[in-house]
Length: 299
Length: 277
Image (cartoon, rainbow over all chains, first blue to last red; front, side, top):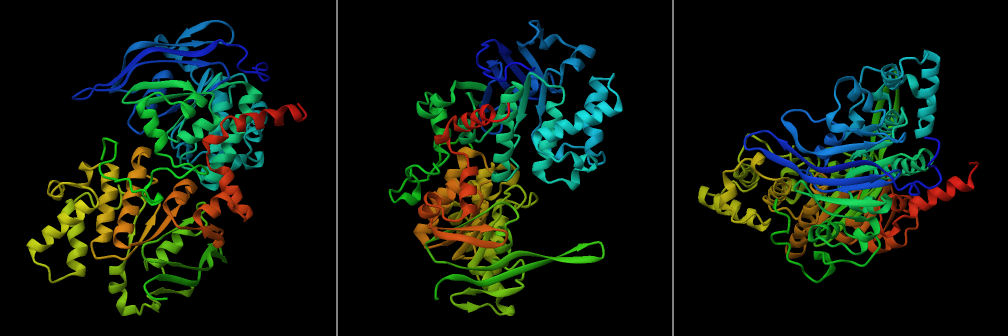
């Protein structure tokens, strides 16, 4: 994990691949949440996964990490993790102890609404330390404390706040603690599910910047899930657009922004008025666009 | 000023208790602005900057510590609150919480109609409700009457909330983050609807948001709030394209802008190589 800081794209070996993954919620009638999704995550890159609520992006992320709970079932497909050591791990067949060791050590996750996923009756020290007591049982208490302090420092939280309880921290700080926790074991992949959606723009920018810095330093790959397409375009290397369980378009951030191929990508892009560019076809621009039935089906 | 909704030198202090000692939080400090019919004023700022406190004062859910809210140039005496609320209505942020799951859609819109126009007959009420639903593009209105909020999507619910705000005959609408809980592809639709109504019926809108891009496109004037104070104001393009106050610049820097594609990565990289690494 010490290498890869200079140019993460140099080693063009993927770190995580999914092949034709289909996930169904076994309810009546069954819901096919993810259909035949094949994705490749290169080492050290930021892959953006964009789509609206209900399109299956969180389900896919859970599938990659084997976190699906009934009634969700992965019907078919393969998820392969290509370890830095050169061995390939078939994630779909892991179970028991091997699965426990794989999770968080190789692939960690920052959950949706993770501001609220800290345990309210445990202080930061205990929660961060918990990762080490589980995955690094040999560590002494002093080592654990020192590592926790390092991690907090890394994500920009004053290590002196280690004894604080979640309610004593601001939303942004809680989110940073969650990221510290995800970084604890130096994973090769970090899946971030709407990590900044509940935060203020100014705080959000600080966290995103920190994430980019950490990526340069530690060389992990990120799957960044959000519906905020402008943000993704700004920070991602590649972007996959998801709709109704399928990836409808996958390309570099630049291609998605400048030459979107799929109609849905264009529609999604059009949903975000430009901050500084020309005024688009909105009602206020003078040329009336009948709002009428909007293109989205949910209207 | 006649025909407008104006706030003048508005202050709101909250007393915070910390053990036995008290401190004062100035949630709003000396805010003055006016919303004219047919125009949209956007109030932007981060959370905690006092935007929602202003909304709550304007809708008389909160009383100001000092300062005045003037409708058509006159303050509202205590006994005239109902009449004031007929003219000034609010659309809340969360369409999933602001509608009662127990009641039908027609109940939600009928109620303000009945309260503010007690003379209407049952038939008249019904046709008004249908008309209002169609005005917010829920067509045909009849099919929505007996449905419950859970049967509608977020965008449809927010349209119901807008119809409800219009029902008493409101001339001014305060919309507090009306689309932040909605899916991205329907946000523009709901904002377009508000803009459309505003233009067609001369509605005055106070649009409260943290999203600079929609504030720019859907309002005539932008007020930037920071720690309870309005630190910058002006025509919307002017404020976004040529921000003068430091905080406005910071907000603009923080807003995602696809045109700056890859820039953050390059910045961070040069930071690392230029640094002690």
